[in-house]
Image (cartoon, rainbow, N blue to C red):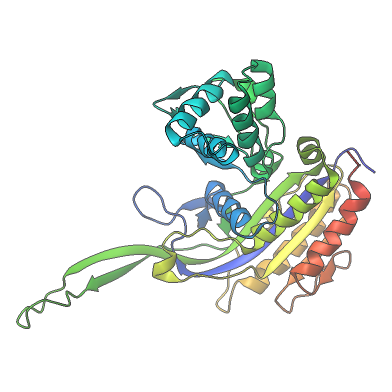
Length: 356
C-alpha cells in the first residue's frame, strides 16, 4: 500500500477531416506548440464527452448533473418520493431547501451552472419533505456522496466556497502530434422545389476543418478520489469507467457533417507513486511524414517514456492496448483488448488502494 497513487492515461487517436471542437468563429481550435500550428481539442470539450459516456454506458448510478435548473431537478426527486406533492409545490420546496443549503437562486434557477449528484439531490429532496432545514446538515449533503464526475472534475460555488469540490482528475487539451493547416469545404444546397429555369443554389456556405493525429492525456490522483468517494470498490469502478470513457468518447461537433467516428490506435496506462507525467514533450518537435503519422507518433511516445525515467521513479504498473504493429517497451505489458486492460488495472488497484 502507498500513500500516493497517480494514474496516467495516454492516447494516440487519428481523426479524418473533422471539426469536433470549434472557436467562436466556427474554426477548428488550434494551438502553437514547438513553433508549429497544431490541431487542438479543449479539455472542457472532451470532459463533456466523457460525462455523456458515463450517462449512457456507466452502470454506476451516481452521475452528476450540471445545470442552471437544479431546482427543478430536486423538485422532480421530491415528486418521486411523495406523489401527493404537486409539481408547483415541489418546485417551491426545492427552491427553499437549496437556498437554505447556501446556494442562491433567482426565479427558481441558480445564478451559475451548479454540479449536483443524484444521491445529493435525493437527500435534499428528503430534507425538504421532512422540513429539515439545519444548515450544517444541508451543507453536509452537498459535500458528502459526491457524484463520480463531481469528484473527478471538481465543482466551484462562487456563493459559498465551502461547497467547492477539488478535482481529482486533470485532462489536458489534446493536440496534434504534427503541424496542420485548416481547410475549407465550400458547399451548396439545392432547393428541391425550385423552378426548372432556376439553376442557382438554394443555399451556399463554407465549413472549416482539418485532419489530425492527436496526443491525448489525463491523470487521476487515486489517493484523493478514494477519499472523496469513501469506497475502494467505487473508486476502482470509477477509474475503470473513466478509462473506458476516455477511450470511447468523442466530442460531437459537426459529427453529422463529417462522420469522424474513430477510436484510438493506442491507450497507454501507468500507475505512479511519485507524480503524474504528461508525455506531450514527445511531440515538441513535430512528427513529419508522407506515409501516416500514427506509427511514428506511437514510437516517439514510447521513446519519451524512456527519457523521462531520468527524472521520475519507475511506474508500479504499465499496460498498453495497441492496434498498430509497433513494439512496446519491455516494461510495458501489451494487452489484447479493452476488457483485458481494465482487468489488469483493476487487479493492480486492488493491491494498491487502501480499504475505506
